[in-house]
Length: 373
Image 1 (cartoon, one colour):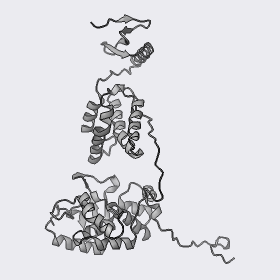
Image 2 (cartoon, helix red, strand yellow):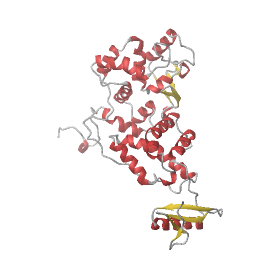
Image 3 (tube, helix red, strand yellow):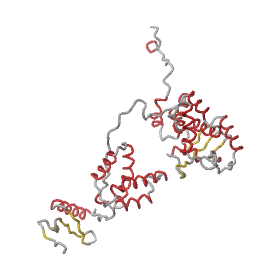
Image 4 (cartoon, rainbow, N blue to C red):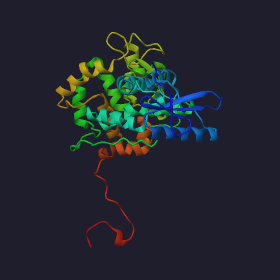
């Protein structure tokens, strides 16, 4: 037999068994109930509901659970700016929600989730040894999801608003996490070890600085070999067509005369030379698989060349290093690589800029740099 409602000293608040129930009528005159563990909590709920009704800000408490809403949200998410969101990013959100957020928060109703739950989720991820960056990436779709839920009137406040995710960073070793480039001698040694059928691809990456996802998506129609320009307009990540990583990723990249000539010869010799065909293919004629290219070709060649640490992305860093040594400034390198700002380019590659600067010349005897007195 269900426990009966007992009146309390607070109007509209009743005791039922070991809990308290707040009864009120919403903005449409319908009777609503909310449960509380203590009389103090019930009194606070009663005050908050009354104030919301007076101000016209009452929101019916959603019974949606996080797991149900998260899957519905990510299926239709279009981003929070006019620029939209990359397909690849949405897939990463889906992966992180299914792998991390839903197992931890999925059983909770949206209205139950408070900032303490998000912090506990972050702490659980950190406790598994994940880096700060990985933890923040896992929280990112939760932030966006909760912002949408608030806009849709499903929750009164965003529990992620003002949330700061911190943590301890592992001691950084000298040179760790810094972009590392090949020297001219190391690059030449790598070229000498790459099999002939893959050499043009590797040389192309080192000269243009393209991301491997951008190279995979290149079609012959993207090349203007008379003008010696490569039009970067798309990327392919894990077989999924996408736009470049940022708006600045859409760019025109110059190539040398020698590279343009080599590309012409490559097209003449290729069985896949139509405008819509990819410029570079696997030996079977399919799209280049970056993992296979790295594992089967680049890593073995790098090991034989004495640079076993080199990867496909090392070629992009090497391109930046060569450009700086040729006298390019940060803005020019930014445009070549498709970064979002020169400041980012400079921060990433400042340690690669040559320090053998020429001695400055200043007018005036007091400002001369010579040591002759």
